Amino acid sequence: YYLLMHNPWKKLSTKIVHKNNWYSVRQDKVITPGGKKGVYSVVTSPPGVYIVAINDRKEIYLIKLFRYTTNMMSVEVPGGGSENQKPLLAAKRELREEVGLVARQWKLLGKFQAFCGISDEMGYVYLAQDLKDVNGSKQREEGIQEVTTVPVKKVFKMIENGEITDAQTIVALNFVRPYVNS
Image (tube, rainbow, N blue to C red):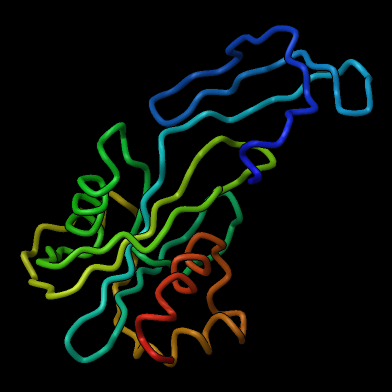
């Protein structure tokens, strides 16, 4: 229903004002829904992937890293940019790079608009189970300071008490909630 609604914005022109290996910034001259001329900048990037990896003990793998952008430590599910790979392939790569795991069972739980006020990025959330440690992580390169496992029930408490504040992680964990009977 929502996708079929009429777009009230009118794009007059567009140009790329910044580009790097991860994203580009597009600047559009527009007429707003209110009829005024304006400029809307959009961050364009490939899809992101977020992995809720659950071991046989019903524990979820979380990573801890310092986020330069917010100047604080962050507790997150493994994930990252798809680097123009298909989302499932990217999820498998990210799980191996960040946690050193491969999974025999994968399930797409859903997708979401990651930063829809400024970006066109879509996020894909995967459940990874039947895990095997392959020691293939690139944690140091990724800036990961710690990998930990947390019981499923405790993860939701970590959101409630503010230990987990990363939006993509909160979304990913909420996607898995029906599968873990929390």
